[in-house]
Every structure is written in structure tokens, then in C-alpha cells.
Length: 446
Image 1 (tube, rainbow, N blue to C red):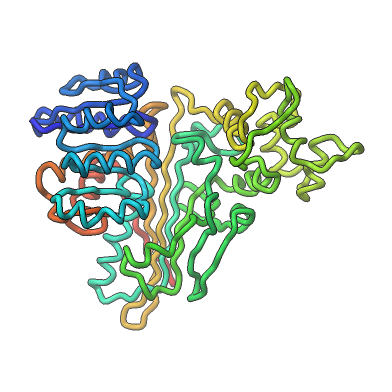
Image 2 (cartoon, rainbow, N blue to C red; image 1 turned 30 degrees about the horizontal axis):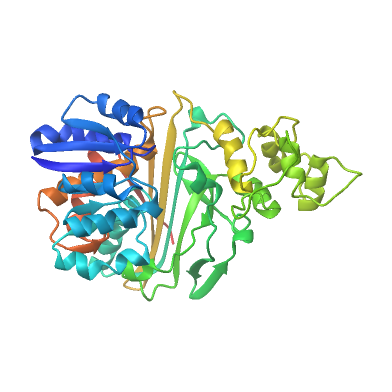
């Protein structure tokens, strides 16, 4: 039997584990789910009767990690992205294939030659975003090129949101994936894209101010803000001369203008520990980032400082979080971002019966025989509950299906790979459609 090791059983792993267990008897797999939290891993394994075991392991410990990897043929790393390099180095040394849903860092690209020489597949960027976005875009781009089209613009947005029936707070948001990544989103570098042939650079402090409205058929309008680096995908997508290329993230309309208040205050800074008085309240937390003002209360001071309407939607959203209350924070010594995350994890918790929603939207503008054309493709996937989320389905299923393709010899390439070739994206997208992950295409008058 061929062995598959899953490292990490977090929020996005339920569909991945379920698929592998369901297919294990036919494919002759033995599946191992390794996580620090043995009880959680066991819960996910027991939800599906089949050929899988859960083990407790600390993937940050070399000896534990390597011992598990050595016993399997393929490793799926669902660990935080910063841990992937340790995993892939072990897999290279131990001659094991590896799949991750995460972006490829430069350090991993540098191993491409060694991975090829070892005859291994290190397949990455294979979740939702990145992952399904790449595959769906490449399928349409390749089709346009086959039909003689010349690309003029490609825009792509994706967001993990909350389904309308579970939308119970003014922000229209609950956590369906790593909360830390949501709080610090957009940090770490200048957002770069190209618009009408001109390079554009967007610093973090303006990121949530310069948004666009994206309309998705049947689900209304969303805010879209720019991802950090859209330009690197010109080469990957074969769009080296395209005048407009932009990738971004979706939030419910109105989210970004309220989130910008946190950015402008400095509440999302993760670089230093806060020093507040003992038993500090959430009002103290906000007040710590405002100019001293003895004439205004904290709420009015914030509105005055940021130029917000006291009766506007932004202040209403901050009110909903209790940020002007006398409630104690309950934690100390954390960074502003981690302190804010502590609050949001309580306020934006996905309840057991809540349904999440994944939304993806592409726009292709191109010419064929000098005629301008526009095609929009949208994807909406709804979750079932707190465990069986749309996020878990759209992140985990592509990874699981790719594992089957690798082990069955259906991928001819070797080295550090992305899912950009038809031999990878065609069968995966076709099978995803069988699981309800289906794009709706619409031709729009250009």
C-alpha cells in the first residue's frame, strides 16, 4: 500500500482528509493524519470510517517530522506556510513527493534543480487562492489563445466570506481560516500591479482605501482590495505583455473602509508588545493609539482623528466589536495585531451551524480579429457547517485530487511545480465540478 502523510489538521483539512479516506480502499492507500492536537485529528479521522490513523506529532521537531515522512510515499503539508521549507527539505532528502496549498517562496524555487534530479514532484499553490484561481484562469486563458485572442486585461479576486443566511454581524465576516493571516493581511511589502500599461504601487496604509466594487451574479457587490504582488504571474500565466494585470481579495461591501480605521490607528501592527495599564479595557486599547484629547470621549476622538461620521457605518462596525466599552481585554503583553485578533476570534467565531461562502471572480478582456471582448467567470461555493466549510472544500479537495494524480503517475513533470498545465488543471477542474465547485461564465459587452 502507498502511504500518504498529512501534516496539520487545521481549519482547511476536513474535506482533504475525507476525500483521501473515501478513496483509500480503491486506491490502496494508507492515510496518516499528524497534528499536535491528537483529539482534533482523531475527530476528523473518525468522521469517516476507513483506512486512516491519527497520530500526535510536533512537526517543528526534526526527529518527529522526519520519522513520519520516512514511512510514507507522499507528504501533504497543511502546516503554516513558514514551516513548509523544513518539510520540503526533509522530503528531498528522504525522496518523497510533497504537495502544499501555499505560495512558493524563493528558497523553494532554488531547490527546483535538485528536486528534478531526484525525480520528485513538489506541487504547490494548489488550494483555493492560490490554486483553483490558477487552474480556472489558465483553462480560460489557454482557450482564448487557441481561438486567436490577444489578452488586454486580466483581473482576479477571491474571498472567504460568510453565507447570507449566517451573516449576523455588521462586518459580514467570520473566520473560516487562519485568523492571524486576516489581521495582518496586506503587510510585508508594497502591493504591485499594472493598469493600462502603467505600473502601480500601493502601500499598506492606503490598501483598504483604494478598493473596487466587484459584482457577482446572484450574490451582489463586494469590496476588492489588491494583493501584494500581481506582477509575478505575468510569466506564470504567459501574459508578459499584458497592459492590465491585477489580483485581489474580496470582502463584503463596506468592510474595507471600516478595517482601514484599524490600519490608520496602528492596531494591526505586529512588531512590538503593547504596554497597557493592568485590567485595561477595549476602550483603553483604542485610546492608546489616539492623540490625547480631554474634551472628547474615545469614540468621538477617533471619529475626529480619522474624519469619520459619528453616525456612519464605520463607527457602527467598531461599536459592534465593543471597542469603546469598559470590558477588560483579558490578555496582556501581546502585539496590537495579536490583541485585536484575540477580540475578533471571539466576535467573528464561526458557530456550529454557520455556513461560510467562497467567492471567486475573474475578468478577461481580449481582442479577436480586432473585436474587443470581455468574459467574466465567477465561482460561489457554500459550506455546510462549522467543520465542513466551503473553505475546507475548496482548499482541501484540489490537494487531495492532486495527491491521487501524483501517486497514479498522471503528472509527467518533475521539480517544483504549479498547477498551470492542462495535464494538471483539466482533470482536477473536471473532478471539482463533480463536487459542486463550478464556474459560471458570462460574456459581457465590451
